[in-house]
Length: 575
Ligand SMILES: Cc1cc2nc3c(=O)[nH]c(=O)nc-3n(C[C@H](O)[C@H](O)[C@H](O)COP(=O)(O)OP(=O)(O)OC[C@H]3O[C@@H](n4cnc5c(N)ncnc54)[C@H](O)[C@@H]3O)c2cc1C
Ligand SMILES: Cc1ncc(C[n+]2csc(CCOP(=O)(O)OP(=O)(O)O)c2C)c(N)n1
Image 1 (cartoon, protein in one colour):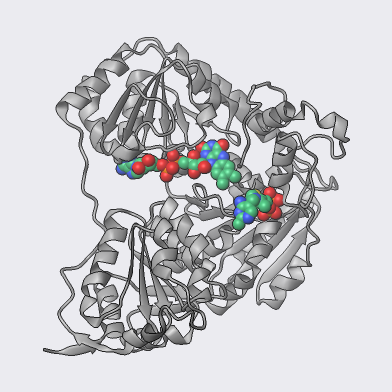
Image 2 (cartoon, rainbow, N blue to C red):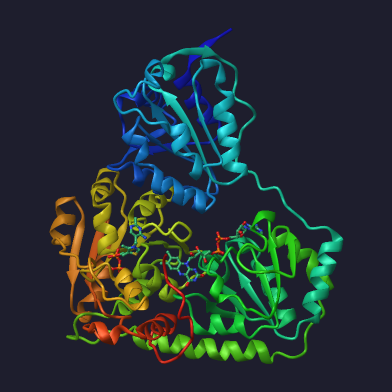
């Protein structure tokens, strides 16, 4: 029987699965694999400065393409650095394979130099996590890992001791191409009928749509038209729902719009479509709740439901539409469309910049970037206030994409995700909304932009604080501590990393600076110095003033201005 090394078989299996790049950091336990990558000429190694970047970059690539993406780390600390990014990929349910090199096989169990147990460490952030301890396991384990990542949508991890990667194994041809597959899940006729009956009964139906609405835009519009339903989006659903949508009433949630919140609370029937919107306080207590999701285990896990249907949104709505009676009364819809317009107007009024008025409003920065960015730009936003600005001010149009660490909620995701996005789509404009805290957390990989000639545009919302947490502290009624940031000269830093860079303090200079950055043929950074206290209360408050403060802060968050009371006193942005 023909023999090839385990590393050779791995690379051949990956090529058969359509993989063209692997992001990671080298280490001698990965040497055998690196050598095969080099020899293959079909897979490109993308060396980054931190393995977490590699995992986030792979996740972004998988999110945007739906295809398998791969990252790798060397043994022990090398692959442990992948872990936070892999949690994000897994939570976002994007197909990512992580290759975790392991210490020499004969040393396992001896507390050897760099010894960890990746087969245990990664279990919680993967669907499949196995150690190759014998050459006869390949290519089967590689193929199962890829299949699992693609079909269960999430992370698979294969741990390979460096010595085993170099050993010869019996060779067979890779299985028939393992590629992303999209089986359609359709509910039974009976289930569709139950769905129709409940929806036909409702007098004020609101739809809450999420990421599962991808590819179902026209069915969603038709359904909302028949039901006269406002459509509220969950954040991961924005890019798929909030365009060409006359029923759009914005997001709900603490960083959403009050129109979205009220449209759900005032409904007698809430239809959840492909959403796992996590914040339980924002679900209605009395309405009839119906949920459609392709994963049965997600039904009813955020709120009590009256009917749960397992199915793809598109397939379910296609079967449902002929059974829906067109509603006559459009008052419920109109009420929240009007409300949305008011809220939108209010938010737009906050997004202004007057020459000479410093510091700039971050909303103004977001709005200008939105205006100047390409029709098909890919945005990524850091966890922190950049997520708020992206949620409220970036216009989606069906071509633009929006990435974030929305489910895992990890800081410092935006630039690493932008790396993956730009690698996957070299011809598209990729723009980050970065926090100064987020950018500095993973700052080393600014160097990767220049090294790999990735023309990513970084917009830094420079507020010299971990602002979002400051806000959370206010919301919790406590006085902040530990949120101050003493920043470097980001412009000097970016220039030394081979980037175009400019700092903007005056609103008058913002448009030219962003335009220049966008036109620059290479990576660019705009440091926008913005108001730190934008969403928060008086900049200085004394301890006794903090009592009862949480209500104020929460309503300020909810509608960006603080002129509407919504009693969510027990709600926190993060726990
Ligand atoms: C700082 C910060 C603040 C945030 N604040 C808010 C906020 O105020 N409002 C907000 O909305 N979000 C907010 N988020 C994001 C929030 O945590 C969730 O990530 C988001 O609400 C989830 O959106 P989703 O339901 O669309 O996506 P997911 O959580 O990914 O859920 C998608 C669901 O659709 C299902 N599905 C997938 N494909 C299909 C299909 N084809 N057919 C049927 N079902 C399918 C999946 O099984 C899953 O259950 C915030 C995040 C951060 C970081
Ligand atoms: C890895 C990680 N550490 C800490 C947190 C808690 N956290 C959430 S947002 C945030 C502040 C983000 O600061 P920055 O990037 O400067 O953005 P800002 O909110 O100031 O605009 C922190 C510390 C987190 N979500 N992830």
